[in-house]
Image (cartoon, rainbow, N blue to C red; front, side, top):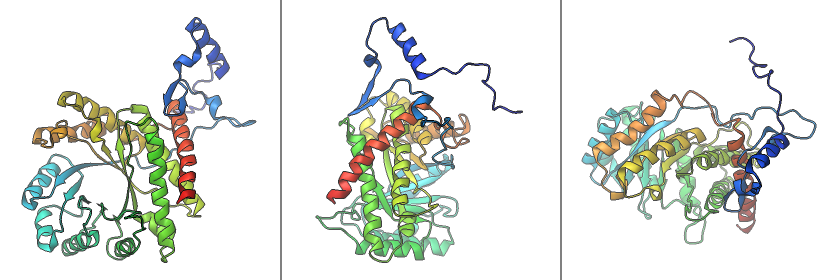
Length: 386
């Protein structure tokens, strides 16, 4: 295509005041405030306009994409109580198009059981992730056993570990020694592994839950930097070990803005620590279990829009819940449909072709800025209290 800069030059610009005048006319006496939406204490304008993003004396420029890599990994959760059964399920998931696996672990596996769990899985082609549910788990041990297997197979060992025992607060005290060991091991033996996962714990029943969750997550991640730099680990190194795990609800546009706001917030934190040109830690997204209802067919539909919110918001890896996950016994069929939702978004909708497709949407840009601004204010209060 030739020059497209003047594609719409034949149309006269319309200011926001012109739009408002027309809206008031069409409302025929109804108050304009009836069109306002609310997210907790935030008022959401139903029709943001380029004028909202102009600085005095400047022409508006399209927003810069918040992320450049549009590709995301299709992930599937695998319960690892029975390592042989888990391995079979993992292989079925890979045959069905999964690109990443997250093993849900309740106990230490040891080298032999870890080998059995990963039997037949090409560690050079698949990212491997662990979720340790046992709060008394020792992630360093699990990571050591995984490293032994990966080293023996010459795999690139890409993935992460999330553990209930590694949190920035534990019985009122900061857990630093465990984290130092984890980070040092990752630097030395598993440079492509994320060992500090920040769980964005959102209260979906609270209108202000999203803002609070974003602020708390950023505060926890920043606290890791603050604590670990005191132990000789650079802020850049801590950032390389971080990952955010974000639940996705059913509010389509707001969920897109939530993930984009997280990127803005963390970029602000890194700027405060003088970390330049650092990559954003990966965002692992999963469909919030509370968003499911007792109707599997409705859950299938919800999974589609939720998955779109996640990938349009910039998720690097996504786990879609099987439609019958609320029964705690998902079937092979429901797992296949959950994977295929993402296959359609990639292979037919091509959502992995465009970096930050929401950039330039006045509505989503406005939501992003409002969420980030509100969360930043809460984050500053949380940081002062800590």
